[in-house]
Figure (cartoon, rainbow, N blue to C red):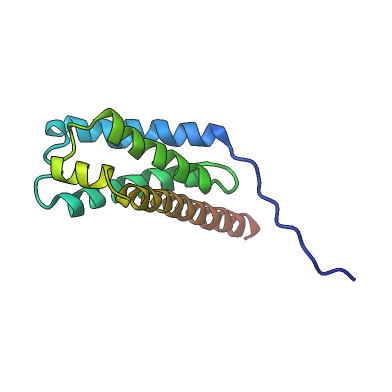
Length: 145
């Protein structure tokens, strides 16, 4: 008897990657830009407030995508989050505080920051998938009774 098993990765769902990126633009960047040009977010303590702003927004949007997608969509919101933050860094450099922007963009902190963004997107999608499984179990129990 052979007990070896093969781990197979499923292909990336490009549809959910694009949907997540568009949702991040619509429900994270657009409302933030309406709030006084996004500078209101970064006035208190730039590294902490930026991390909090990005973390809450990315985790919540990724959780929604993970909840709405059928099956397990975990890596796609993480990749879309990295694309989103990279586009914010390179397309809107004037929005970020100068000291934070040049410290992150010119050092290896950019790679660490993007890895944290990827993990936040994956965490949010996993949370959404978990909520989706809970809902399905609750519906199955309701139908069983």
